Amino acid sequence: MFRPIQTIIDTTALQHNLAVVRQKVGHARTIAVIKADAYGHGLLHSARALSAANAFAVLELEAAVKLRDAGFQQPIILLEGFFSSHELDAINQYRLSTVIHHHEQLSMLSAYRGSNKLAIFLKINTGMNRLGFKPKPGNSALHALKQQEFIGEITLMTHFACADDAAEQQLVIQQLNEFSVLRAECGIHLPCSLANSAAILRYPQTHADWVRPGLLLYGVSPLPEKTGIEMGLRPAMTLTSQIIAIQKLSPGDRLGYGAQFTASQAMRIGIVAAGYADGYPRHAPTGTPVLVNGQRTRIVGRISMDMLSIDLQGIDHANIGSTVTLWGRGLPVEQVATAAQTISYELLAAISPRVPRCATP
Image (cartoon, rainbow, N blue to C red; front, side, top):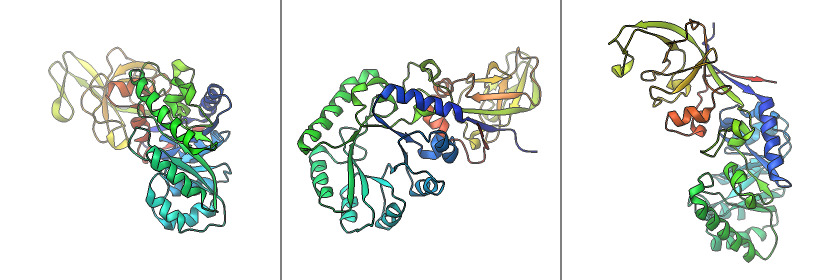
């Protein structure tokens, strides 16, 4: 008997969401961002569902190799580039594209001679101050790359800090202007990649040659004012479990670690096989929504490592074995993230490896 918690991955939803993105961005090519095990959805079956994308982006060399070994032929981009010169042979062998964002990477490249042309995404720091060259050093880095015979196509890229926040429009425009100055100083036309999921939706002028949707592909909104469902997307992940025990509380009874919840009346409590070791957020407070057999109710008390408790008042049909939806179909993950004072990205990416993933065709 397997523990009942699982994630159900709707691969047709992934295909639908990619189609929605492509319709929004017109002629721009699409880089499907499938880092962090495809935001918790599973790397390979997500890549198969998103195979119409023009390219993939991952973090680790190991993930890129896994995609190549599975037969994927489109460009695969390493978003943080390489961390040592020892990786360059594999990057060359597997025909991977790499981000370059600091001078040490340039030095390692200058000492390397590969048999294949190496496609480069040159990261420009326009104001996020995380990775990348400032515009003037970026121009020097571009010049250095162009001197290398084995360097193939060079794409300029940047990343927006606040594209999701309508109140920070000025910062986005400032970053866009910084990027435009660099492009003008280059003296040649190079393909560009600027837009993440939020910029795809909010700033069409950033679509350029390549867009990099991540969260949108999984049916989740990067914008605080709307859910993915309200945008015509379909949630690709549904996290479900079951009630494994029922407790009957009397008025004044206290529940769980820290005894933080006190029953104000007689009530039934369902104990659900899901906890923070599965990736459910420990800080989710009493009141965080769940569904029991499709009916909305709430979490009560503190989340345990392997279990959580839910209020069964008014859900007389709930019993041991009843299905509990923690997010997904019928319960947008955005609502759970808001209740737990976190972001949807964290919930999706934090799903534990011990939770089985079941992909539906």
